[in-house]
Amino acid sequence: MRPEVLITRPMPDKVIAEALTKLSLTIREDTTPMTEAECIDALHRYDAVLPTLGDRFNTAVFAASHAPQCRLLANFGVGYNHIDVAAAKAAGILVANTPGAVTDATADIAMTLMLMTARRAGEGERMVRAGAWQGWYPTQLLGAHVTGKTVGIIGMGRIGKAIAKRAHFGFDMQIRYFNRSPVAEPDVSSQQVDLAQALASDFVVIAVPGGPATHHLIGREALAQMKPHAFLINIARGDIVDESALIDALHNKTIAGAGLDVYEHEPEVAPELIAMENVTLLPHLGTASLEVREAMGLMAVHNLFAFFDGKPLPNPV
Image (cartoon, rainbow, N blue to C red; front, top):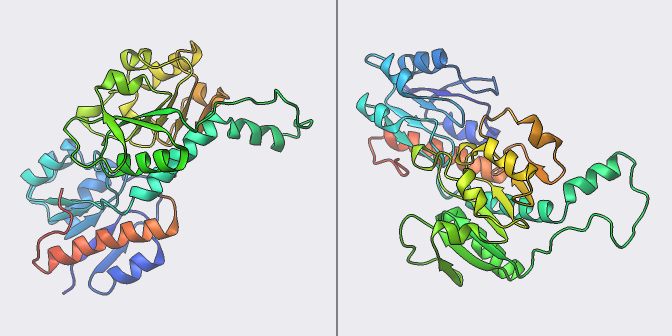
């Protein structure tokens, strides 16, 4: 008998076709995160679950799940702060993720946000679409130059290094980075600094994992250490930034602008942010290309295959 697996969101056809070669699938067609009741039910109904962002398998879910049938959460995504890994393991459930597949696409979005925000591209597009553009003149929508500026990267893992390569080799930027541990091979000419020094850059890019250790890492104190002409870019997790503090910093011109792909209360976006012209807002597009989503899905499926074949997980958490 094939293992029974729940896939919690619609997936690319290639991922489903691969999974069906070895697994019996139930595919949840709803695109919104699972409720707590659905998470509890899934742990008792299926041999494994392939969850993704927002499917909160938290302490309460595991506390309400006695003798669960599920033995693996094969997460779709590198980030897994929506899963209480310790509680899962205490319940006898392994957790896997999909590192590596998301690196380049996420780094590309970081550069997109840097350029859009500094050069006021979103503001300009809104002007054109509204029919308000009256033609070119020398002082229209003057933005900030990117080439040759300093960038402080908060978190120098795979994604941080990929951002550093793009910024250094593509835009001749000076790279500073803050990382909780020494980085043996940053791959580009760069300087490891403390958080305050990284924050004192022209651009600050957040690339650390989400979770309790980084919750509100960028709060009022950190934002106050940024320069008035600097831009904050977040492609990591929304709750790494204290959003109310960010709104105040933007209102008070403590910083010049922000580019956000993630939000503290996602998918809700603060009306104050929506109203600001100096903020670029994207709907969590970090990995949104077909090739990348297929690669992520196949990696999650291969974690499932390995588990049910009795082999070590390729990507255990």
